[in-house]
Image (cartoon, rainbow, N blue to C red; front, side):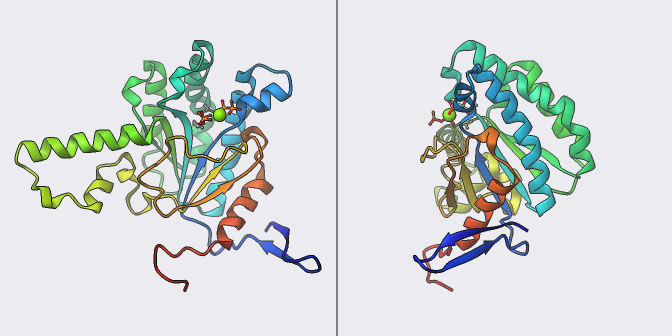
Length: 257
Ligand code: IPE
Ligand code: IPE
Ligand code: MG
């Protein structure tokens, strides 16, 4: 149980606690700030990515222990190829390192690995590491650890539109059958079943933008922005972010319950 203090007014303070009975089902995280974390320590940017990988392990364990159903982690965007070759190639090696050392623990914790993104475009060793991790954990029934890898929200929507248009063109799909549900089912997140849309999107590092993450799926998600750089994300800041989510009043266009 974690608690922290929020000033209600100048005289009174109220304690906020993480309500373990209302943990969000799908938590999505934009893991940002690795480079700045390293730069502040006069280290190369890749040192931040290395430390960020350790944070992924810690947060995965925490999320699984809290009973989160799906943890989606934005690890590499379709725009991150613009970075210097050395950084990109280090990032492409990280999933290999991560799964090499962490799959036994994932199995121990009953966590199943999934991925969204254009996996075919990854270097083959990276793709194989991801595919092996999915295969090795496929029978696990606990939390889904869903990596967004070479993922972009706009590209995902374009791919879905192409698939739908192809079916219309070849006569297997009437235009009237294109519904919100059908579009959702055409997204890469369809494999997450009832948990496709994140309840909360957390972004670290102080940037307040979406950076092409889950554009369709966040229609009614809550957003929590933290100043912490991803390698500094710890149990307290993670639980505080969830507690902040629990303070929100989700209306989905309706009226307050
Ligand atoms: C997030 O950290 C990791 C990836 C985008 C791969 P950054 O590398 O973006 O770190 P900053 O934002 O430059 O500090
Ligand atoms: C978003 O972070 C992508 C990931 C965390 C993988 P970026 O660092 O790439 O986003 P921008 O460039 O600051 O918007
Ligand atoms: Mg960044």
